[in-house]
Image 1 (tube, rainbow, N blue to C red):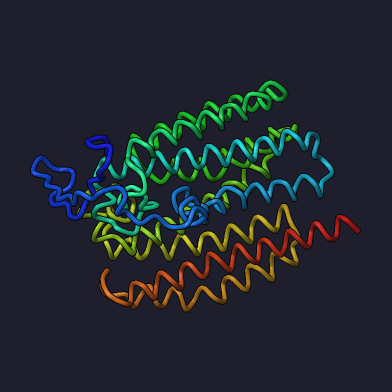
Image 2: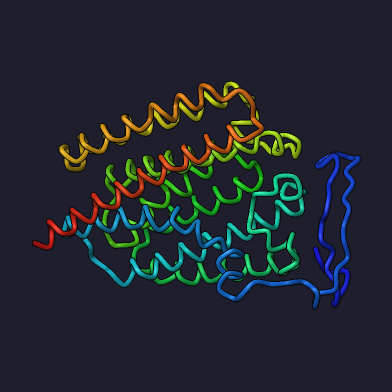
Length: 331
């Protein structure tokens, strides 16, 4: 917890037999004044994992464009408050996850997970937990005026809280899909004063699917370390060979779902162009996955970079498409 001393921090160096009765942890005791903390901006961005804000802000952007161009936005103020509350909730969940991963020893084995704020000695685990509670309170505070104005949001809020608790207890990908997908887009649309529709649900499902693709890809690259830490996810349960097929199938299905969504709800022409482009750049990635012979080494890093590039291209393409909708609506 980091509470053993007011002047020193215990930095974890090595963990053996994590999550077992014979677990052994080696710490290095360091004076706080000898711990090098980065500049404030970098410290805050890394501790709160600002680079992951895209995971919540992008689907909110998609829902906003959908309703603005459809001239159905009723309460812009409630929408802004909702965005702030969602960001606070995301930061709270992220900090809570860092705290639990530290306490369970996962971050001491899978060294590329989390913000590393605790492991670097920038913050004590107890501080990370306190900040998590603080941002949760802020998120609930932001939710009050929205729920009072639009009571239908309360049901989504309660389901989201239960799903978050489920995620920390079980730790499966289904909760991630729900929280960053359908629950996020449907709840946000309701908070704008707009009735539920099937498009917001499917939009959230499509984004949640893409986020899970990235999660599966990351888990594949760290399958050895996460297996040692007894980290529970679909990739570890399947094993290396089947996990490769899972990542490939997951991406291919996203391309199919992306095209189907555009057939029914967006520009068919842009959908055809976008789906064709995604399908074209998929072949090289699938070949790299097929040739991957070991979960260790430079081949895995190359596969991860190629897979992440597909994710980035999909997001950029989707963003440009929605800016086009805004320009066309404005004129």
